[in-house]
Image (tube, rainbow, N blue to C red; front, side, top):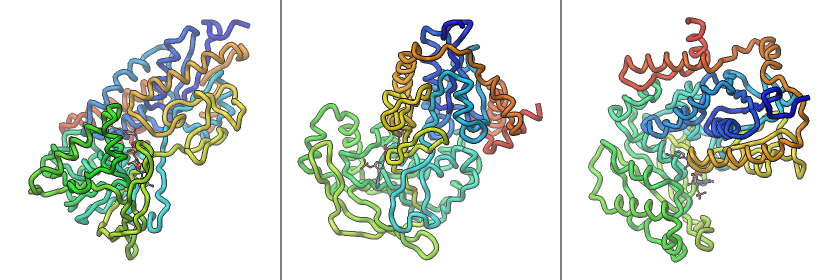
Length: 459
Ligand code: NAP
């Protein structure tokens, strides 16, 4: 039998998930010494994960990595299998029978819960739903957000919260030439929201947003950012945090907040209130969300380890719609161990483990490996690290020849799955761009799997 990783017996790798970490893992495999063939599986017909359906439509520059992913996809050793759900259409066991290695790069598809009364009232949503909706993700296109109220609340102060606040605060003119889904543009055009509250449980020195994203809230056409200068007063531990030059982003964000606080009184149609040291403790309303009960917090603990402690003082805020933007969470796949507490696949340096036991051939990279942190580029080094673990393990693998996806086609055919190849995706992509050109947008996304597949049957 030929040595594994040669032209005669290439390493067969399945990548599950087509977001940044999947493409960076592919790139790292192609750059490695052994010969590797990659088959990438994606449950939607469209690739690119959160770069397509998470990055805000008004941030086109952040979508530029797609050009890199396209180049990787053009490599002859790469194949794309879209519209295939691992764990449903094919099992992990079936994948392991056809591949030497399976790398899970399936991200964090759901949200953390607040765990408070009223969380599931009508009008209370996850940021994921809203982001997926305005980005035309098929899972969320039918969601309805009641924007007929004056007050909207966003819980959390990460960059996703800033995205949600900005989309709620922008005018239609600021959005209409982006790739925002048409249904979202139409609903936002009718929005009656005037006050958007972004509420953080800790202080201004601990907020997770980055200064560049925060600054944009001060550059909107018809919305003023509002910060109460009293809320920017720092306790000694927070002062110490901001004196530490390694907290560059927090220092810069604090400067932006101070600039917001010293602005003249707001005059524009909308206001985005950025508030600190408050935690939601209950959502109230008759049949639907009407009021939010907030606990005032105080910071407790050492610098860089401060947590929000309750003061016992509460306040109520009228609000008709609320978005919980408190971080993403991975979802399990049958046949792979899952860490319920952290919402990730348990792993050691990217090797998936069950207890202390390493499961041969199974790897993870990206958010499903480390949790939902970092920017798109963070996933490159993370995927490289996982691929390094995988390459170090290769000598211990059996050199059996594996068929790759050719061994799965009969199963997929039997299940009636219309597999979408990369060439198929390029057709869908071209059709979206064409639709977009007609309305002066970079693309008009298809927002259902059926619509995407219809492009292929029509051609
Ligand atoms: P994140 O940065 O982790 O922020 C989560 C926020 O939720 C924090 O303010 C956190 O507060 C708060 N939170 C968590 N549990 C809470 C609770 N029980 N009650 C109240 N607040 C709670 O997460 P994210 O905004 O979802 O972003 C995920 C990643 O994607 C981040 O790395 C982000 O930078 C990145 N991203 C980047 C961009 C961009 O570059 N433009 C855009 C979007 C997302 P604590 O700090 O107190 O935990």
